[in-house]
Length: 297
Image (cartoon, rainbow, N blue to C red; front, side, top):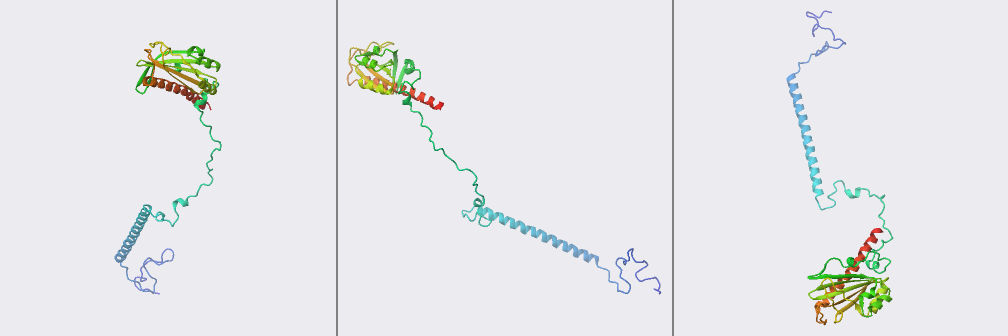
């Protein structure tokens, strides 16, 4: 068969390497389409790309707005006084969502009460507990006694185990028969008034209370260290008290030998100040020994 001049209408070549038609050509006997408008196709493809990009960008913006709205909602609800508003996830509060730890042991308390602190008076109520050293200087330290605006100069000190030797009248006999262990005396003076205090110790507080009730006579005044003899032949004020196993006495008067009357308030005040100081010193012994015993428990 003759194809006429120039061979087949689609050109000189044979089929492609694998029996396919050459690119852009149609089999013989079909109408050949017109050449595509490549510029129009490229413009359309570019338009579709721009539309797709705007769609993606627009979707991202919507998502960003949605997230911002959710965060704003959470902030508003978190700051709300409404307990339901604080829960953005459907009614379950954060506290109820946390499981309660039921494995932790419950606190326990001892049924045995701790022992009460020792009573300081107990330690000065019997010779068995009252074992701290006791001297005239430990009981009456320093060179003066200050009570408020009153300052008393300390005179002589004296300690003896022969308790009757430091007494007047029947007091010596009372001390001796009740087993007096020692008698400590100290004198304080101020503005022509002098007071001697005497402290006698016994085995127990019961014995000391008995001595106080049986007191007759008084402790002898103690002269020296600038204080002349006083209250030996004149009228003086005297007292007797007990605390624990201690009995303490005072005798006070004028250093010039005048008798004491009820109107002489300076004598009464001086005697009360010295007696109060003696009581406090005895109590301090009890406090110190009680503290030491508590620390040793």
